[in-house]
Image (cartoon, rainbow, N blue to C red; front, side, top):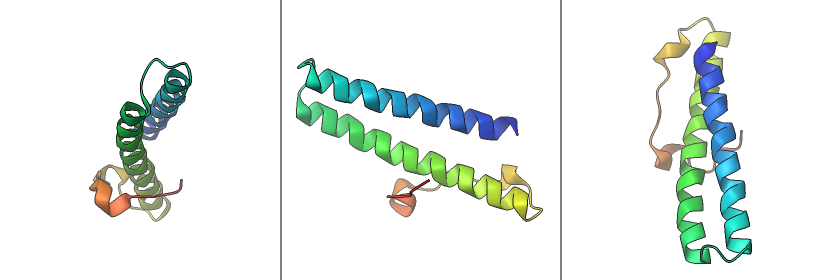
Length: 82
């Protein structure tokens, strides 16, 4: 499923962004408040991506069209553990 691969690629990019942010704060390149703000945004987006991927896989597993899955609000998927 090409769409699933795109979602996984985006997740990988966001995890790398998270790593870079942590390295930047450790190196003193950005302050911890900036890091926290950016990390909060990344975490929300990651939760949404994992949720979308989970929805797509569940739909495919049960014979539905995975393209009917949609991104849900971050408040609905907050803290999702993929």
